[in-house]
Length: 391
Ligand SMILES: Cc1ncc(COP(=O)(O)O)c(C=O)c1O
Image (cartoon, rainbow, N blue to C red; front, top):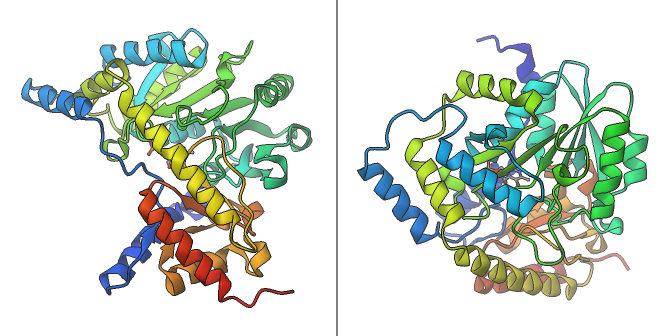
């Protein structure tokens, strides 16, 4: 069949492919430690699972209103008002299939062929893929280890052209764990206003933060009217398989988001939305315990990696990834990740899965037990010791 021309632009997320590759190896009897997958290894909290079961029993099995149930939109608005620092009107909240749904609708609604969109590099690969799919041009904004994995605001300003339509930011970030400071966000807000840019602010890791405060770009003066906030339940409540996300959009985008929801999924499953209300309004101790455990794992993996000659790893302030520079081992990230899987049984991702800037890096997700992380560190150290490192 002849595919539509726009399919030439669509990319992928190599984490899914890497996981399949690692599983194929395991099926042959090889032991593999999985540090490639970006999902919490915890169970969805029991109160949330029970709320879903009760909703099913109550017959909450029919279509919901397309923007989301009134109860969930109200709960999201209250939670976001409290945590993100700006007043959120429930009418601006749209419940989507995963946080990814927000990315799709924001880019579909705003990007015309020929438009430029500034995307983080390294960054979540779907931003770039969707921009190309819409006929736009992704323009990478370098995020470097030497700058603490924060974008350089002067460099950002230099990349804006008359064709720039939109900017994507992600803090805390995948794959680096970097967190933008309030000062960075103020500078970004000034650039967005000066050049009349829309901003997609991906805050899906906003609660997985180990130091400092989570600042939402939309809370800065004048920014709620040009920012689409992406958030969801996948990471915070270990609900990746439920596929529940949400957008907080400017009033001027509400119509477009509604139409895109109606044209794609009609609505998100009704009983899940009831469970999501429980996630937001019920006890939060499972989230706190998960973040405390992630912090311990972060320290374990950062200290362990830095003890290996040729690897340098920053201590990220958020999310559950590390993005070490492995160039001191003499290997580029892609070869390092490949050989680490086949020669040492540790599955990680090449930095280039997230853009060209990460060529010397690999990404480990530490959403795995401390015991498995220790095994992965031992295997990585043995693997590196066996390499012929240039003097
Ligand atoms: C930065 C970032 N944004 C969005 C998503 C997508 O989240 P969801 O699974 O809710 O679609 C991910 C998932 O890995 C992510 O890392």
